Amino acid sequence: MLEEKILSPRLEALKANLIGDIPAEAAARDELSALPLVRLIAIYLNWVDRLIAPRKRAVSFASGFFEKIADEEKLLAIRQWAAKVEAGQDLSDYLSTYTRTHGYSSRSGSRRGIKWADGRNGDRDFALNTMGVHHFHLVPAKADGSRPKGSRELIYARVERHSVHAVLLGDHNSFNDGSLRKAVAAAHYQEGLIFVGLTPARDDLTIEERQQLARKGVSTVETVADSVVPVGFSSSDGSAFEHVRHADRVAELIEYWEPLLDTPRGLADLRRVVPFGLSLDGLRWAFAYSDFGLFTTDKVFLSMLPWKR
Image (cartoon, rainbow, N blue to C red; front, side, top):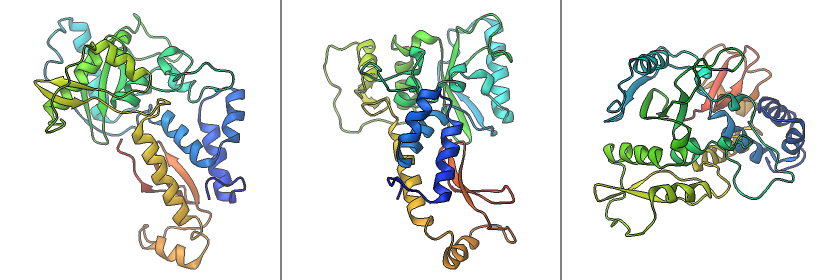
């Protein structure tokens, strides 16, 4: 159904909304329009997961996070960031301004290789897609996108639906020098996320070289205290496996429900799981950040497939 060129009006509306939401230049939008809906959903998730849905979350810090931070101004900035996270405030000003402009980059005439966002013209978030962590600027941006006193320091943190775990205060070089990879591996080890029964490989690759392999779409592991620890996994085009799986689940949900939504049986089944008295006229498919479901004419969002964040 989602691979077909002729879609139902409801799915055509979903496709148009996704194309309108993804930040992209005109040429890139033409490419998006030509894609099948299932592929478009995966591209949308690749972009929208870089954003943070405003929601109260408990903040924690990895062991050793503060060891090398002595600057009182930086400590205050970290506390201010954590307070906004816990209060459920909008964190957009802490995110890269590229999240507002580089949702999808044109593939036409582009060089081979993954188009990472930290290359200034790509749309794949290296830290998020390969290691599952967001990066927040220590200094929030002003309305014009500039950041007072620069924006060298970055807080790298794993964002979940009700929690945020900060693993490193680094900078843009942490993407490449191995420090972020080391911090993520240490955090996974502390949580018991290890490959049981595997013996650490005796290779000659440095942590920086393994990080460069990740940039090419090659997933590798790290050794922490003689344990093999996964750092993260992505596909050969830089897509996060989790985004692809979520897109597949969205497609499966649509395949099941779309033919039923205009039938008495389908509406009866839906009424069993929606608030009493809610109108089910004019239902339309929609995302709320990465959560997927239906919007009613009463502008109520019925979440049918929540995302982990």
